[in-house]
Image (cartoon, rainbow, N blue to C red; front, side, top):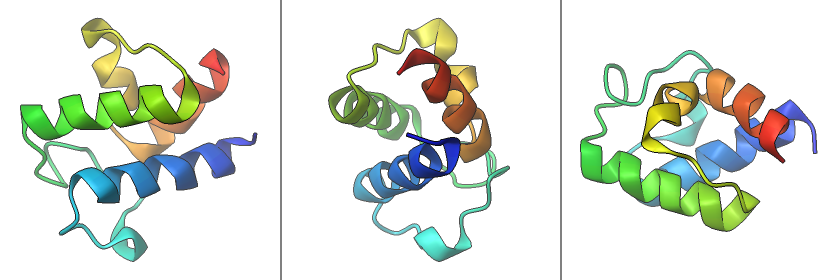
Length: 80
């Protein structure tokens, strides 16, 4: 799975957690809280969704590594 595949999957899960987000407008550098306005519960739900989809455990200390689609794609590619 390439980083682009992972980024697309991440955005799919992001939109499932926050359906008001238009996936066509999400940029690789968009920050979950600062740009996309997710709250802590949304982020937790995203972490759970990513765990289910990729089988990767993400600790709270690693949350900054999934804070944008680009960061998440790189991080998840290393863990898969």
